Length: 39
Image (cartoon, rainbow, N blue to C red; front, top):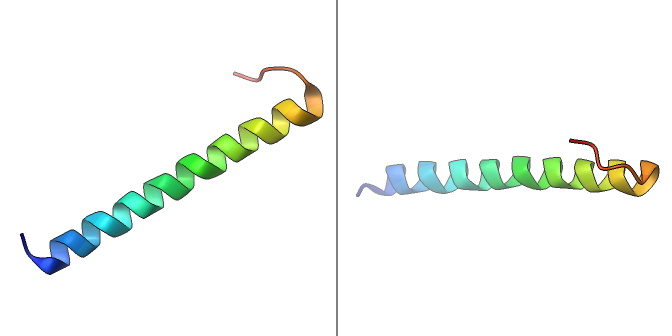
């Protein structure tokens, strides 16, 4: 595997992880403020 491909896959993984973390943080914030599970 080329180093460029590995770098691209790593960057994609970090980006997806950051998006999932932000979504989880927003869900926790909504639950903490309203005490209602928002689905």
